[in-house]
Image (cartoon, rainbow, N blue to C red; front, side, top):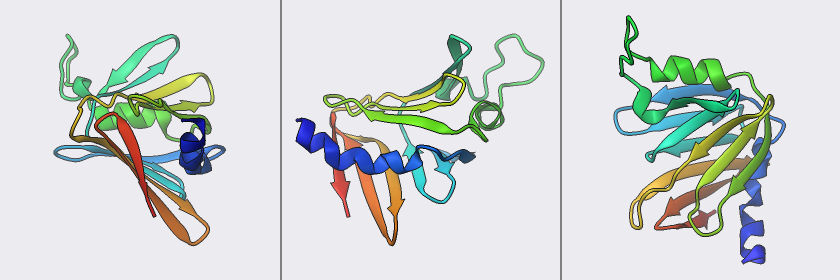
Length: 143
């Protein structure tokens, strides 16, 4: 299994880079990492900072006793944009994705289906793009 996971180290291209943009589309979220990486997320995710869950994908649009509904994109940008990535990990069995940012901020994607694509990523290395798809508790790589 360890040799198999090494091929997914291409996502480490995001280490030392910053999250630059976050977009919420109708059915998924897009997280951009400078010009080197993109994560498309159709599964549950959360951002942990200051030793607590600061935001999740289902918080978007919720009131939680506030005057206005939570703007998930704006809050996610506040928490992640401009922060440098220090580690990227893919869980070997579940394909959950974990991206650690400076300041002990953690972005976690929970691959919640045995058949659907939970998340996809694109890593740009030199002149090639490497595509990753988390599906059914495993991650596949396409060149």
